[in-house]
Every structure is written in structure tokens, then in C-alpha cells.
Length: 119
Length: 326
Ligand SMILES: Cc1cc2nc3c(=O)[nH]c(=O)nc-3n(C[C@H](O)[C@H](O)[C@H](O)COP(=O)(O)OP(=O)(O)OC[C@H]3O[C@@H](n4cnc5c(N)ncnc54)[C@H](O)[C@@H]3O)c2cc1C
Ligand code: SF4
Image (cartoon, rainbow over the protein chains, first blue to last red):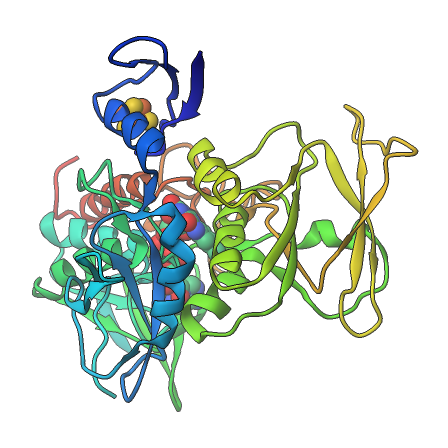
């Protein structure tokens, strides 16, 4: 059986074909090596980097944009959003600063993606 | 009246890149006007990833991409950044009028670079039958409401058009807890990147209706539903294919047009069809010394290309000012 999927690692969007019967599975269609890793993880445990914003208190912006420092399992995305909604950021941050340590209890960090100063 | 060698209007990625390149090519007296309270332009509301792969060889979010340039520009001498400065007028002899909180100022420039970005098309709405209730937004405006203002404009959404901003917003609405009942696209395929179809639509099992258009909107005060109908290759409705989609919000993602009203005031020739300046060469206009870059020159898909071409605009201005050799 072959499975088709689109690699989302870059805007080229290669159509990958995964031959599931071959051992180890054979992947074709990728224009660069990243496609292989993508296809493998997509079959075992699909993950996505989650981006969103957290509410702030006494900062210059109402929201601070954030991202996970690593891809989150797809099935955990809605739980991750629940957690993000609970956060209130109260200190000034720069891009790259950690907003939540060990987010979701999986060792994943939530980091700020822009500078947000005090009012 | 103040005088400046170079005035740049707009502090998005294009304006910042143009300023940096002009400075690096020897222009020493630069004023950058930005109407917002911060630099970065539209990137600030694009909190998702997918920026910068070409230019920085890294995957960044919109705000991170902007942050890199903000840091760079702040580190350069001779560039004055004037925030909350809204350019409202321009003349052919390069006098720019701008509003700052509580006052109006005029600056005479020897060269001008316009980097005012684009705005969303909304015209297509006019042809849809039915009522005109509230709840109809452009996709980019909804993006601003959610990502900057922290307001969720609706609970049950239909997206019209499948440009990247619409696709990105479909995912955002789902993540924020709303339902996206469908994406309705009149063409046979998406205008957006395939990766956005995968990670924004398929990941969340959102129905996407290609070769369909909206034929009617229902609702008195607020949108309640719409009719979608299949179209043939000439975009005519195919009878018997109509179905209703319940929704309280409709997002329009039907394309962008360059924002160029100011240079038109200054006598720059504008192409009526595209709203871009009439131009024989990248970034140039019909008036020598007035340059345009980024989304106000033409609508770009990827910000990396905006940066590349806007760096070129900064160099062109430096050449015009006799600072750099062509
Ligand atoms: C709603 C929207 C969403 C987008 N989402 C994506 C995306 O997800 N991914 C992607 O790759 N690209 C996206 N784009 C394309 C994106 O716009 C470009 O990649 C890039 O941001 C364009 O840069 P720019 O500097 O030309 O314009 P902008 O980023 O729009 O910057 C223009 C700047 O000029 C300022 N300005 C305008 N008029 C005046 C004035 N009269 N006086 C003073 N300042 C002024 C504005 O405030 C703004 O800061 C999006 C575009 C829009 C409109
Ligand atoms: S395989 Fe490589 S080139 Fe193709 S989409 Fe994936 S990352 Fe991009």
C-alpha cells in the first residue's frame, strides 16, 4: 500500500509517496531530506508547532504572541489551547523568552515571539 | 518645514528593509513614518509560523521575523523612527504631510520610498444577494481582532475564498473554540499554499467546497446562514446544487490590493486594474525620486521576497540621491 501526503516543512509542499509495504518504508517525492523525517513522524506521531497569544496584565499590549519551542502532538493541540487560555503574562518579555516552562507536562516550553514591555 | 534626505512611509518589513539598505548604501538622514505604535506592519498579527525560511534559513513566526528587523534598524544610526505618524498628504515636489498625536507636520524630502502595504479586497461581497446583517469580516481584520485585540468575532464561521489568510484564519477559529462550517472557493483549487490546506484545513477536518460560490446571505441583525451553490467553468450557478450552511460569521478572503492613494496625490501614475504604480522597473514610479516597495508595489506571497525587493528599493533611493553607485 502507498500513502500520499504533502510535506509541510516548507512552502514547496512536495507530494510524498510512502510505500508502506517496503521494509523499511520507502519515501519518494521529497525534494530535500527533511521530507523523510516529516513522513516518518506523520505516520507515527503527527506533531505541529502551536502558535497563539496569551493574555497579559499591566503590559503595553493586551496579548503577547507565543509559540511552542517544539512540535506538540496533534491530538494534544486542544488541551494546549486550554492551557494557553489560563496564562496571564505579567512581566515584560523579549522574543525567545520563556512564558511557560514544561508546558503540558511534556517538557515543551512556551516562548514569546515578540517584545512586550511594561505599560 | 523640516527637510530630510529620505522619507520612508510605512514601517512594515518593506519599509524597514528599505531603510536599512538605504543606510547601508550611504544615505545618512532618514525619517521613517509609521502610523501604528510599533514597527512590523501586518507581521504583528500573523502569529503563525512559516516566515523567513528563505532569508533567515529558519522558520519564524510573523512577529519574530519583524523582531529581527526591528532590532537591526534600532541598532543603526541616522534612521529616525517616528511612530504614531500617519502620512496623509504628498506633493509632486516631495513634501509629505503627517499627523502625530495632537499635531500636524510637514517634511520636505529629496527622495521618498512608499512602503504602505496593501489592503483587503471586499468588493466581491456587493454581488451577493440577501440581507446585509453584521458578522461579515475580511479575514485579515478578523486576524487582527483575534491576535491583537483578543476578541473572537464569532462562534460558527464560513470562509469565502481560500487565500492563505483565510486558511490560516480557519485554523485560528477552530483553535480558539469556534466551529468552521466550511471554506467556499469559486475556483477548482485553492489560491493558497498546499501546506496551508494540509495544516489548516485537513488537520481539523474542515470541509472545503471548490467550484462553489455563495448565492445568498440570511439574517436580520446578525448573519444566520448562507446558501452555497456549485458553479460551472464559467462560474454560472448549477441549478439543484444549492445547500445552506449555518453560521454567525462570514470571513472574506478574496485577495489583496496595493495601498497607493498618497502617491496618486503626488501625481504618480497608477495602474487602475492592479492599483500598483505604473512602472518599467522594480520599485520605480513615473516620478523620479518616488519609489514604492513591498505590498504597495505589488502583492507578494512571501515576506522573504518583500524583504529582498525592498532592500533593492533602499539601494535605488541611495543611487538616486548620489550616495551609491548603480
Ligand atoms: C491581513 C494580511 C495577512 C497576511 N498574512 C500573511 C501570512 O500569513 N503569510 C505571509 O507570508 N504573508 C502574509 N501577508 C502578506 C504580508 O503582508 C507581506 O508578506 C508583508 O507583510 C508585506 O510587507 P509590507 O511592509 O509591504 O506591508 P505591511 O506589513 O502591511 O506594512 C505596511 C506598513 O505601513 C504602515 N502604513 C500604511 N499607510 C501608512 C501611512 N499613510 N502613514 C504611515 N504608515 C502607514 C502600516 O501601518 C504598516 O505598518 C498578509 C497580508 C495581509 C494584508
Ligand atoms: S521535502 Fe523538503 S523541499 Fe519538499 S516540502 Fe518538504 S522541506 Fe520542502
